[in-house]
Picture 1 (cartoon, helix red, strand yellow):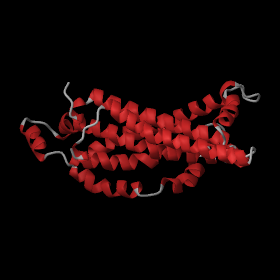
Picture 2 (cartoon, helix red, strand yellow):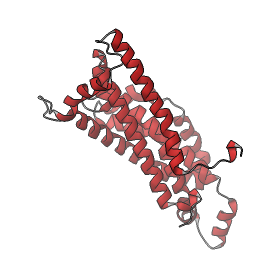
Picture 3 (tube, rainbow, N blue to C red):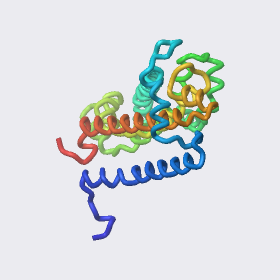
Length: 271
């Protein structure tokens, strides 16, 4: 049987997916052990024991100044910013994307503007946002929204505009107006695509969040990474990066699960 025709069971997919991850971890441990054998004070590739020791204070000991457990305070602050930014961007995407995709005159008027905004590097807007909105939470959330919303809007608008014309004609034959077509025809078919757009936006959203926190913040995962980098504290940086990766994976899995449960027909499944 050709490989292109082979279908993998879920257990096999999980096992095969773990193999390269375990090999990468093994490769890291071997390299770290070699470096520490040559230089026990090496800080570039810390051993797992060193990372556990470095993280223990952030995880289980309250900070003398703030009284907070710094790791969990950083996580909560970053997730709040990310959640608000992603939520606002998703709401804007749903509204603007539906309008642009359903109404050709609106698409012709505002489509070029959305495209122009989407191609602007969001990081280049960071100084403008900090000057205009200050160094508080608003600028950080605005960066996430501006970074992902225009791209998501373009995707949803294009998806809605590409719906079969026959559906629009049938709805009009039954007496539906423009807004009824938008709500009853376009919206249900746009929702699975919206979940897909959110999954694709997660990576850029984390990038913009970490960038904003690194420049102007006093708490957050990005803030902590850039705070300890001056001390070459890889025993803190690597676990923080691994934690961000795990959070991103869990969010992606959650969105996939919600999409499959809410819209099984869009994934080739039956109710």
